[in-house]
Length: 219
Image 1 (cartoon, rainbow, N blue to C red):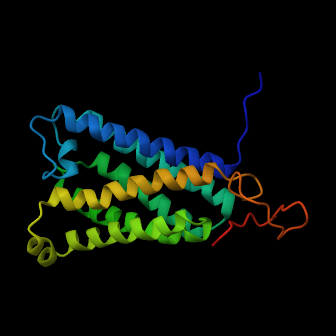
Image 2 (cartoon, one colour):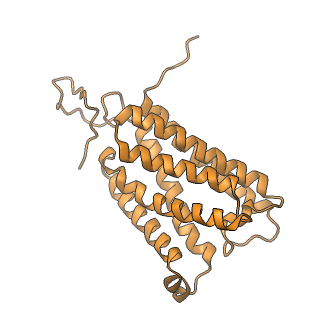
Image 3 (spheres, rainbow, N blue to C red):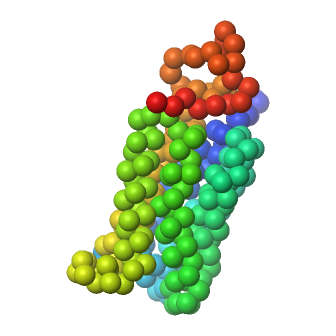
C-alpha cells in the first residue's frame, strides 16, 4: 500500500495543528500535576524543577520543533521570507523556553519577551496567506495577544491593572495557540491550486482555476 503524499503547505498545516494541540493538552496535564497550581502563577512556573517539569518542557519543546519544521515547509510552499522568519523565531523561542526554564531566569525572561511579541505579530505577517472570515479573526486575536504582551513589557501598565501576571500571560498564550490551530487547519484545507476546499473556483490562471502562483483568495 502506497503512503499518501502531501504538498508542502498541507504538511506545514498539519505540523502547526498537531504541535499546538499536543502543547495545549500538555499544558492542561502539567497544571493538573503541579501541586496547588493557580492561573495567577506564570505558565513558565510549570517548567521549574518539580512534578510538572518533564511534561511541560517536553511538550513545549515539541511545539517549538513542530513550528520550526512547519516554517521550512511554509517557505517551500509560498517563498515568503517574513512568514518563514516569524514562524522560525516562534519555534526557536518555544524550544529555548523549554531548554532554559524559569529557574534560569534572565535567559528565560529574554526568550519569553521575544516569543510574546513574535506571537502577537505573526497573525498580521501571514494575512496575505489567509482568506476571510479567518483573516478577521487573525486580526482580532493578534491585536489581543500583542496588546497583552505590551502590558507585560511595561510595568506601569501591568501594575495599574491589578491583574496577576499569569492571567495576562494567558491572554498572550491562549489566543496564539487558538490562532495557530486555526491557521494550520486553513492551510491543510487548501487544495493544490491554493483554494480552500469547497470554495468556488476562480480563474486567475485559466479556465481550470489553476493558479501557478498559489495565491490565496482574499475578501
